[in-house]
Image (cartoon, rainbow, N blue to C red; front, side):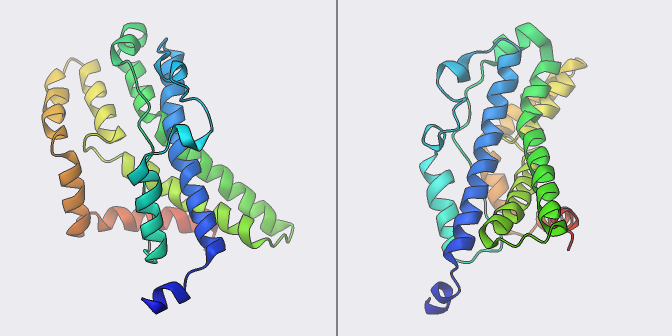
Amino acid sequence: MSKMFSDFDPIIALASIAALLIAVIGHEIMHGAAAYMYGDTTAKNMGRFSVNPIKHIDPIGTIVLPLLLTISGAKFLFGWAKPVPINVNRVLGRGGHKAMIVVSLAGVAYNFLAAGLAAGLLHLLSAFGVEQYFLTSLLIYLIRWNVVLAVFNLLPIPPLDGANAIAHSAAAFGFYGVGRALDRLGAWGFIILIVIMATGAISPIFTAMQAIVKAMIGI
């Protein structure tokens, strides 16, 4: 226990948690923004377009879990914000299943874009010889957590974005049974995720995440 706290770096912890907040909150805002493009004002009416973290915080996913993982020195950080409410029927009515595919993948697109921008800034700082511990750490963690969130959310397991995108992609071609099957699987979604993480079945995906992050950082 004493070693755990002796290795604790408050600047790294702050950079890591700040990056995670930017990743998860931006992810959720983009879901709402995409739905707004198709006439769904639910998120806007509830004030969920705000960058104020308080409006998006989930006590467990945004505070407790990231804090425990950071203090324990875990090799990865994960969390989530309160999901942005989406009126699926309104989006479907304005844009069909293609619109719901856009809404489903908007958060993932944001995460990849944010990771790319952070990587660009990191290499720019390096090119100009700028060395700033907190800023460099923040950019590295922005790359890491955005890639983790994007790739993880692409898993075809409900309630993750990948499952929603698959369901609406199938429905666009008339295969509605896929969505119904994923809905039934949804009740077990979090249990399935816990099992694949606990058993190491997700290791190849984390290996792929690490490869993407290292390539973007330039290691």
